[in-house]
Image (cartoon, rainbow, N blue to C red; front, side):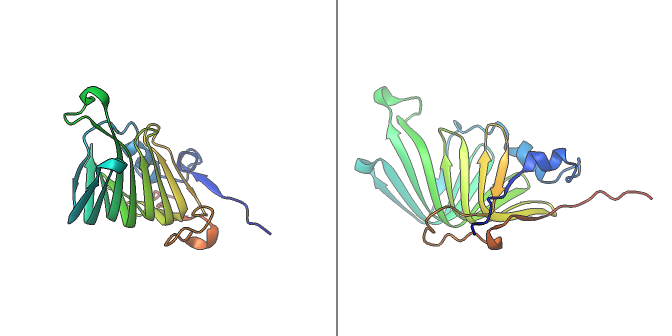
Amino acid sequence: MKKPLILLSLGALGAAGLLSTGGGVEAWAQVLKNHDSNAPVNFTADRIEVQDRADRVIVSGNVEVTQAGMTLNAARMTVAYKNQPGGGTGTNGVQIDRIDASGNVVVTKADETARGNVAIYDLNSKLITMLGNVSLTQGANRLTGGRLVIDLTSGRSTVDGRATGGGASGVTSGAGGRVSGTFTVPQRKN
């Protein structure tokens, strides 16, 4: 029998009163809300390979990508781009469409951290999808599961218990196909 898919909306947790109003995972959503995916993308790495005919760049070895206060770290990333006719809006006429990251992927902004085996940052749809042993942490609050989708426009994050169909290499769901979490509770006087 197939286990039901468990979706956990972080906004719903906050509405249900499971998170303290002074922080918690609800704050994670607010940190990423309205992220500027049009801001310049800067990177450092041990190695870079430009595959201009394929419109991609492969960076590897201690890769760090930063954009508007958000940092993405991984062992390897493939950056897909397209050349803009007439020079585009950037200084070099290149528009980054997507970043695929693998190997201990970590996304941070302010004091919030998301981790996973693999991440796909679609700059056009403003979504980051993380797969395999994902965790979302803010202070002492933590969620774990198989897949995490972060909407950078709304700030809404969704965790579910499965990585994705097909069992991609190096991608495991973790947590036995379920979502688990720990949330701090404000101290109340009796």
